[in-house]
Image (cartoon, rainbow, N blue to C red; front, side, top):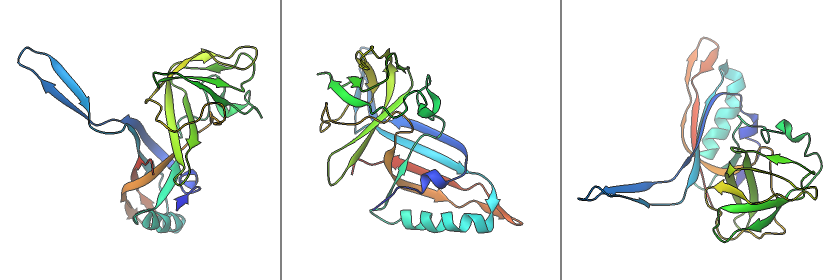
Length: 211
């Protein structure tokens, strides 16, 4: 079962959020370096919770305990960004519904339709979508090379990382530009330590799951 409200309710004082792809590096006798992937590129995060009164943290601790059980997941997002660089909060985007229009054959370039005229997608922006059934997979990508939408609301090709995985259906998949989420599992939790009436130092570590 996926908890859809847990992460949004946290009072986070510090966050680490990064894309992690396990790789193997070998050096040959002639000085050549061979680098190979050992698994899927997944997003990881580490969130430090702000100092809170013990009673205020009790509900969070109960939900953390539940999320540590096998099979439990939650939705998470990078709280440092609230929408595209050129449109914080998605004010310009408004009620428009972006759609994944095109996926290039190289699986790293996309076009997005349904945007306001001249809408800017900047380098570093986060985009995401959901696809599949049982399970529903939450894809999250970061823009490497952005673009500006045409008068009809369609962008040229935009390069993203990581590569787009098989299963997404161009033409019908809605794209989230404001706080797109990943589905995550809790790797570890440090409940912090109590000082008089406050608890501080609580830290959660999590990783994206494709299940």
